[in-house]
Length: 105
Image 1 (cartoon, rainbow, N blue to C red):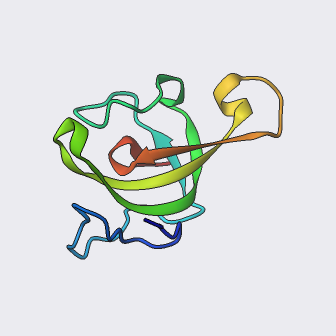
Image 2: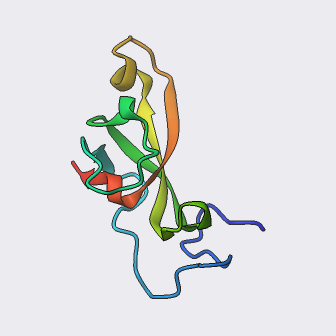
């Protein structure tokens, strides 16, 4: 199954069918929440509290293995490595995170 990174819908099993827009747009600055509050526990702890920029919008993902159903929208977020590691560099790290972990800056 092929998913266009710019497409906001997903046509696979369990795809979202309601007309819900992404909360964030490409280029928008976001912060990763510090606590999960029931959110997807797979978010790396080293990113919590860090600020990045939305690089790509994806659709919703279906997760049958944990019986949770359809996760919130997925985003690729670009972080400056210096923000994450504290070391001086111009490199970036790209991480896919669900919407429930992100808050506006």
